[in-house]
Length: 476
Image 1 (tube, helix red, strand yellow):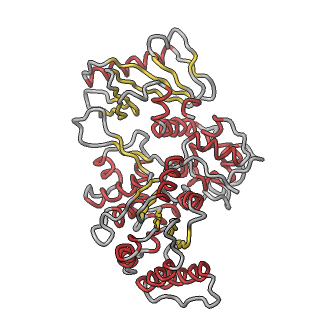
Image 2 (cartoon, helix red, strand yellow):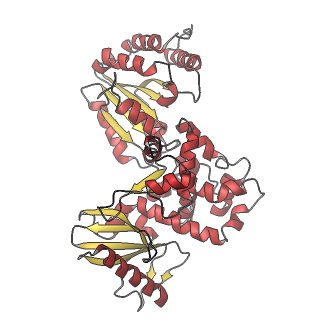
């Protein structure tokens, strides 16, 4: 039996609801394939009395037929029910079924998975569901769990609903991809023995998505696995990119266009730069697309260090999307050992630098623990100064402003051995620090922190310049 890895706080929250004296309506969001269904079924396997999964692009009659089939399976009726004519009728049937199975002592669970696929336009699902909850379910010893991969849809149409479900959600959970540590634990349960360097290489290509990681074969190296999963004709991730976005967003072409544009610039873009590059109007439509992508975990927004600046920096943070656009799209189905060849190119080195920076940004809490500053309030930001005709620009992807009168600038290096700081590189870091101090006019103490895969060789160039050196182990 597959083991539930991580999700400690989420498990605790769901288990605690079993002791609640009131009915609970739980909304769980998280990107596709992240493990929402597995979490719910593992936590509530003994309490689920009915569940229903939406069918992607399914017409109303198809969804209702699916309901009838599920109901017949749960009711174990020798005479399956006929397909309801509407969701109002379906929820009436469900209520009568549940009334006979609810207990005053033990909570029961009803689970609606992929709700956005159930609540199609003109289906009246949400109205019928809202009435079902308000008129009956909210007074029962019952937990109703609703899940959806389209996080923005869930937030707009359910969490922030102004109709029958307004303020009805009693618990909201958002499931993130696995961290590096959780990825390592997951791979161990599947009897893989990859090193942390190899796990990081893998993470940079497909992120911490359990469904993707499940495809690994321990008989192959990481390079061979990436070749097989991402580049081979039958590989799960060889054509996942378009499927992924079209399964989550209506008119996904705009979302893909924004992701493609942002992925073309390593440092990320401001909203105005994005609109110009993607040839999109900088209006509410672009705002909605960006919000969709942020809420679904594909794009991250970073506030600039200078609080006076209004525009945030947007960058793609989904590992698989970046990897697909950089390597897979142009090289699919080209025969064996494609990744073995591509991983020796200059493009690979550039990509690993960017991808490793993204991983560090996602593991900022781990970094703060390793620096022994977890208890000090700090604000992570990026620093971006556009170049002009007379002045050179400056970009620092991670700046940590601390409450103890200190600012840390981070240099991130993905390297296949212990990193040695040369005189030239040390001079470059001093110049960047000096430029940062000049541009910000800060009076705080400014210090470099180096994050590299295997740490730093301390030498005459690093002393007095790099205040702390962290390795890959600190991210785990």
